[in-house]
Length: 112
Image 1 (tube, rainbow, N blue to C red):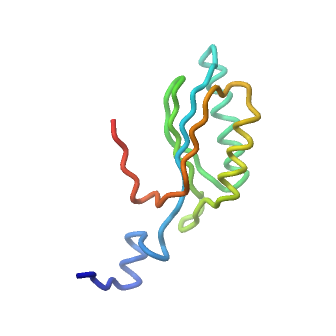
Image 2: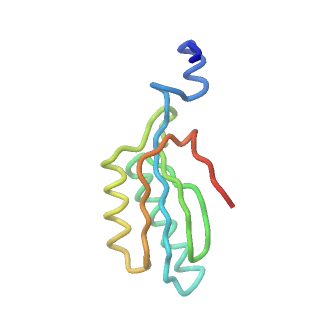
């Protein structure tokens, strides 16, 4: 039995037309120092911000990041995903890239 939710509740819960999409990327880097790692992450964040995206996550040589829109009800697009992929593939620090599909960020579950 499906329940009918009001528009106000769907908005509050980020459901249906208010769902927020983004993507997860996994990176394996070949940086040799913390400074190189910091410079790469800062450059990625700057590039993402130029597209009105936010980056969250972490790691050292194996990094898992979540990328989503900086706008309140905005979503990352397939074009954003492709731009991030192209930017990362041009970098010498990246050994391996695992780029996930667009997903509803409020439904993501992470496992340790």
